[in-house]
Image (spheres, rainbow, N blue to C red):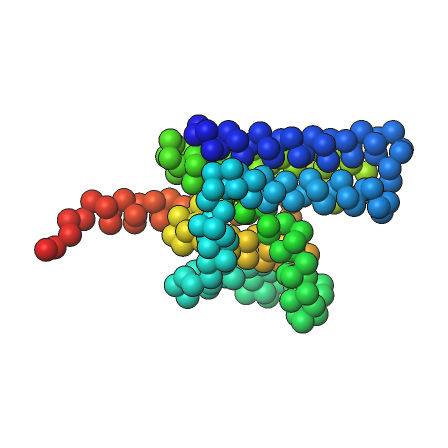
Length: 260
């Protein structure tokens, strides 16, 4: 692990301890309740810890200007905009598509009007998307300096899932009653898709947008999966397959001799 990755993780851990861990303790003691001002201050501070840590790490290394360009890098090939829109969408609506094609009567796909999804997406940039400034902006490229993309993806996914763990001990959060093991495995599986996107575009902006879109789809679509396990398996097959195909194609490109 590089020194830069160590610095990033230590700062992130410190911020999480003084925010989410403290909030979990105060919440369990009944001192702070969901909706209190102090609740939101501590909750948001923890949520922004990957962002804060990434900025602090780059300020220490005097690379903030260069790093900022990656955060706002939106000039990428158009196919990657299609990628972040379509691939996550397919992963959410696949059962609905199957039921519709089979003539099985199902509920409506959307549970909110389409126009409302725009506002949800903007909200999700703050409520999730900005995490990518740290996870894919700093940690993934640093890990890939000393590890393969596969090992780096697994490591980032594991750390990303564990980072969420304090939320399971805070009353009122959406994670409070969710199965952590399923969540952790889903996060690791999702990391394969983010690795493909970041390695292809070197754009933190695109990772922010894909994270925001995924949260938007989650909030906007009815789920037609028969269970969380089935959803995990299907998404796992889809995302890991995309990662494997990408790695094979990239390896062949490197092995193909360039004509002079």
